Amino acid sequence: MGGRAFRLRRAEVSIKHAMSAMLPKTRTKALLTALTLAAAAAAAPALADVEFRHALDDSALDLSPIKGEEITDAVKSFRKDGVNPYNGNAEALAAGKTIYEDNCQACHLDDGRGGMGPSLIDNVFVNARANTDVGMFEIIHSGASGAMRSFSQRGVTQDQILKVIAYIHSLKK
Ligand code: HEC
Image 1: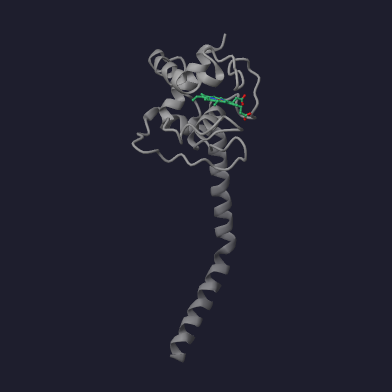
Image 2: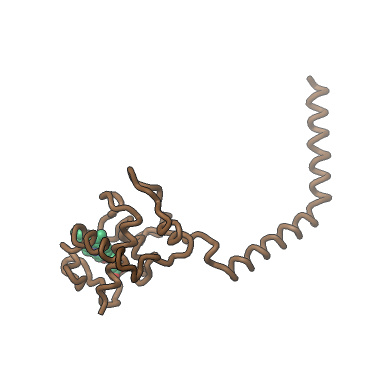
């Protein structure tokens, strides 16, 4: 028993020695890797996934699919680079109009000019990131203050959110 524990201890000590001997080189290597990665990220930000955060407290959003939801290619691409592939796409705009009429019009009115919810077409923003598609997505998906609730919790899919955002852009004069 005692012998075994001693051998283990010896092994631990020699691993520690080996590691401390290796450390400077390993450190340099790790530093170089980090620098290379940082340079790559700066050159091609599209490679990194967009971070989606809650409009009110900046907590990370849970973007796991809701019941029966398919994560479409449009959503995957949006989550990579933050560019809404449906902007200006006629078919998506037609679908977005229906989603808007069913879910948003009551508060933001038919042309987006605002009623009980703020105008979505005047380029004045209540929430910090609402001037970007990522910020709008965050708000529609997970809610903001007061009456602006999470539409994901009401069964609106991420693909539908992208379509309704594209539709809102089409309402701007
Ligand atoms: C029950 C009323 C209500 C409904 C329905 C509603 N909203 Fe809102 N919406 C609001 C209110 C109120 C705010 C302001 C929230 C705040 O101050 O943070 C808001 C804010 C927003 C914002 C952020 C605007 C900004 O300047 O920060 C967006 C984008 C938005 N809503 C889109 C939508 C979309 C798209 C739908 C439909 C899927 C929708 N809303 C449905 C009431 C509503």
